[in-house]
Length: 256
Ligand code: NDP
Image (cartoon, rainbow, N blue to C red; front, side, top):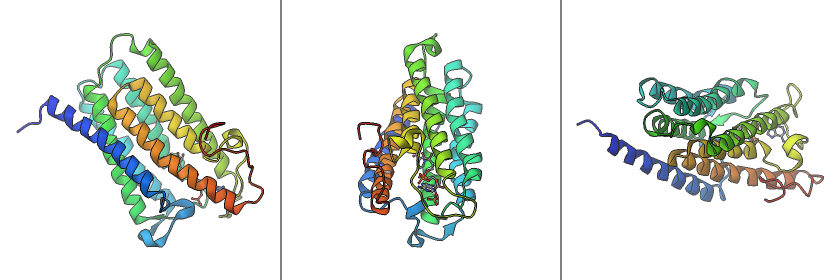
C-alpha cells in the first residue's frame, strides 16, 4: 500500500517532535558525559577514526538526501522551496566537503560518535529535504516578505559567524601542534562557544525563513546539543586557563 500525502505529513510531524525530544534527551545526558569527540574524545566509545574522513562521511547524508529528494519532489520546483533547499544544501556542502579538509590536527572521532552523527544526518536530511521538496507551501511574494528576509539575514549572519569562528579556532595551532589555546577575536571576545552561537543563529534564521515545524525542530535540537557543548567548553577553559577572560559568556553575547 502506498503511503498517502496526509500520512507522510503526519510522519514528518512526528519525526520533528522526535528530533526535539532527542535534542532535549541528549542535553540531559550531556550534563553527565560530554559528547565524545574533539577534546573529549575517548577510546571507550569505539575505535578511533581519523577526523577528516569521519566528518566528511557523517555529514554527507545531510547534503545528498535532500538533493535526491529535491530531484523528485512535487514542490521542489517552486522558488521559495528551491531557495530554502539551496540554503540547507549550501551549509552541508561546506560542512561535508570543505570544513573537514581544513581541520588541523583534529582529534580522532570514536566510531560510536561517528555513527550517531551519521544517523542524525540521515534523519534530519530526510526531515528537512522531504518537508521542503514536497510539502512546504508558500504564498506568492514569500521571498519578499518579512519572515523570509529576517530569517535569511539571520541564516547568513549565523553562517558567517560560524565559519569565521571555526577559522579563528583552526588558526590557533601552528602546523603539527595539537594543544589548546585561548581563542581571541571575532565573537570569541563575547562568548566561549562563538562557532556554536553562529550555527544556532543560522538554524533559527533558517526556521524563520521556512516557517515549518521541521525546521523549527532542527533549530531547537541544535540549541540543545550545541548549548551543552558550549557550556562544557566554557567550564573546561575556566579550569585549564587561569587567565581565561572572566567576562566572557558561554553562548549568547552579554546574556548567557
Ligand atoms: P570545537 O570548537 O570543539 O572544535 C572545532 C575545531 O577547532 C577542532 O578541530 C578543534 O580541535 C579545534 N579547536 C577548538 N578549540 C580549540 C582551541 N581552544 N585551541 C586549538 N584548537 C581548538 O567544535 P566541534 O568540533 O564541536 O564542531 C565543529 C563544527 O561543527 C562547528 O562549526 C559546529 O557548529 C558544527 N557542529 C554542528 C552540530 C549541529 O548539531 N548542527 C553538531 C556538532 C558540531 P580538536 O578536534 O583537537 O578539539
